[in-house]
Length: 203
Image (cartoon, rainbow, N blue to C red; front, side, top):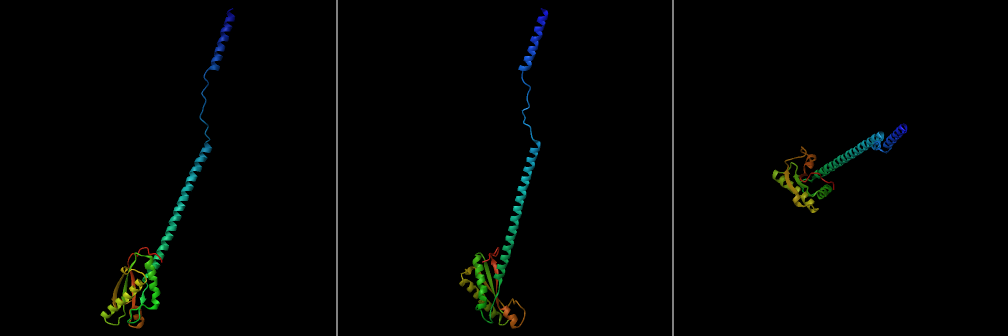
């Protein structure tokens, strides 16, 4: 009888242990997803490479813009210098005359176009003579020569207030000499900018 009771007790204990083993809380599971390290590293390298490529593209574009701007500035500078040289072109006069010669009208027409294209531009016309004649006479003649050029420009639409005149008489010869070769070069009008000469536009 004791043997049966002992067997029952042992069986019951085993059942209890088995029930406890089956019915208890399960062991905790690792829920963190597995990370593919190689794929993550590749994505990071790709992102860095893309950012570097974009930076290089922006730098190339900035360099191209700077180069184009330098070219444009250089072209504008050349055009401005060309306009300045055209504006400075002299006209000449016959002996003891102040009327505009037909071969100088084209030169004055170029100045008209420049003045029209650059409305802020102001100039001074200086009249000059050769050494013959008195100082007083040559000052008056130089003034008539400067006025003739001014009148030509004004008659072609340029506001008279933009043009000053000055006579130098025989005081500033362009060429030293005492013959017609020198005198013909000294009988002239010179043109200089007095205002608005920055960044001159080509007509």
